[in-house]
Picture 1: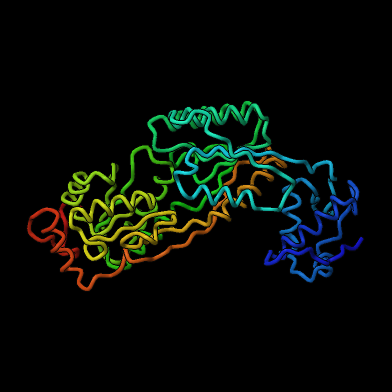
Picture 2: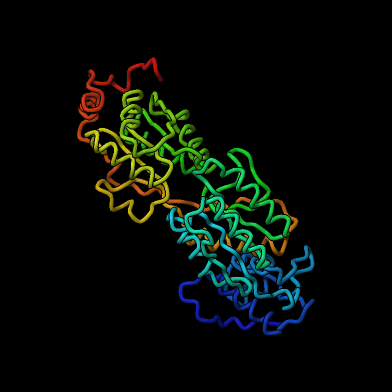
Amino acid sequence: MAINPEFESFTGAPKYKQIYSRLRNAIVNREFSSGDKLPSENELVKQFGASRPTVSRALAQLETENLVERRAGSGTFVRGEKNVGNLVFGLLIPDLGVTEIFEPICRGISIERSGPSHDLLWGATLSPGAPVEDQARQLCEYYLQRKVSGIFFAPLELTARNEESNRRITAAIDEAHIPIILLDRDIYAYPQRSEYDLVAIDHRRAGFVIANHLIEVGVRRIIFFSRPHSAPTVAMRTAGVFEAIQTSSKGKVSGWTECGDPSDVELVRTVMTRHRPDAFVCANDLTAARLMTSLNSLGVDIPSQVKVTGFDDVRYASLLQTPLTTIRQPCLDLGATALAAMFGRIANPGTPARDYLLDFQLVVRQSTALPASNSEALSSLANVVTGEEPVRSANNDDPEA
């Protein structure tokens, strides 16, 4: 049976999605019955005027949603409309409204139109003012009572009990036999790995890319700065930063990690005195913004004396007094991928856990711009922060490195 190749109106949609939608509608509208064989890939290539990889991707999406079964050597067969249901998913995101990347990720989940019919539960805070761990636990219980079809979970961070809380939440969801898709981070400290699907960027590679950018613009003394009890993604970013430092071909590059409150001016002064860095890689944009405020209060000029970078590219990153160089996460695409991963997990519950890693973008702004004279900047920095003699040239051996 031939498929009518006329597409519905999907302005700007990739062709594979248009093909997928036409095939899905043919199944739902009973143009094919359960057990019927779809036209071969070669036939679909001719009917839709598309490449074979494009057709194959559309069929893979249908298989992910349990609408068809692809049998090696036989073809693709319809499983039937009975598998298309109205699913309800819960969003268990304690950082929603606090960490800016999660709002557009949720929007990406909500606006994605591929896959079976589904609804999202955002979940209201049941105990305003309660510890975030208690709020997350209560929201989890609410979703379990509603018997949702799946839960998108962004594990807790920045609390002393986050690891214990994350394990308890996922154990309760497992006991209810509800699939989980993790957003941005795992529940275990890197390099451990849980048994859940994870949708994120490659945080280690992102750390490498941003540190390599700093090295390319002349930085030789780098501090990775984070807050206590940060998510496992921070450890991955740290690993990437130090991989760039250790493999640099630009001469000797030194690096350190510091953990604390970036708004603590005296802590920042101590860090500057101890290491005399010429750059900070901050765990995220919020940490970077607060650190920049502390550096400014110490009279440290950004970027001529110290360069600063972040991660996420939140809305205010470009609006800071010194616009911030950062890693931009593809939040809408992360949301859409998370939804596809959920459909895949529902269709194939026994498959091993997968990492869905999306690409990112390095956004270069003024906070890492080259100064007129690196040597003058280093000398001025030593005087401003420590009151001591100017720091040695970055090319000299450093017994502290």
